[in-house]
Image (cartoon, rainbow, N blue to C red; front, side, top):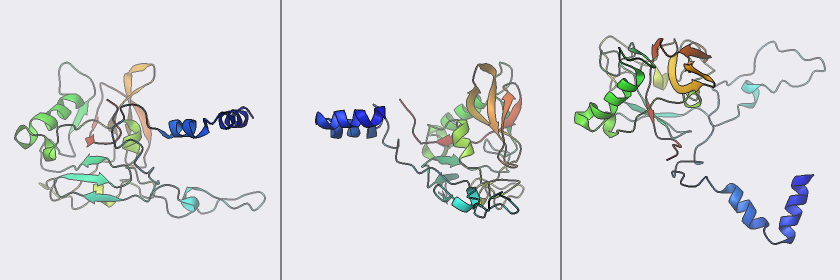
Length: 229
């Protein structure tokens, strides 16, 4: 009721168009990418089998509605994958012992061993003769929502689109294969009020689990998206 009265008041004062425009305006200093992406679908394409209802109501579950942009990716041919919904660019993982090797794990925080932050720093400063991996030096660890965005809930073990898991063989590089481990991957998101833990995402089925920052988990770098200054 209050919102209706507010609209009426704004309209009577000739301020409705100004207010509406302000509500649609991105936050100050937002990069051009903010607000331009599409929320991705989960990847489920068929309704669940065997769901029962008391009244015979239609089960409008995820597989029935299929809300969101269909999962869509492009292999850029330079060791990266672009998500055509979110605009994020993802690091491909290899099986060649390099800094991109799918088998490498890191702790989130430590004074005595390499952490995820040391790994990201190496990708940005030591790859590409110092230019950065694939010509970019703004790679980062994805936050938990970004990491979840590449989970394909229509697949299991690994629960990712084939763009992230194909042609894997011993010695394959980011130019010849794309690999994904199923155990948890680190996100950059700390658990609220628990500074010793951060959120992880596994690619068995897309579970989100808190992990101690002293634990070793897999990693995948990302760049782009809506990053506030």
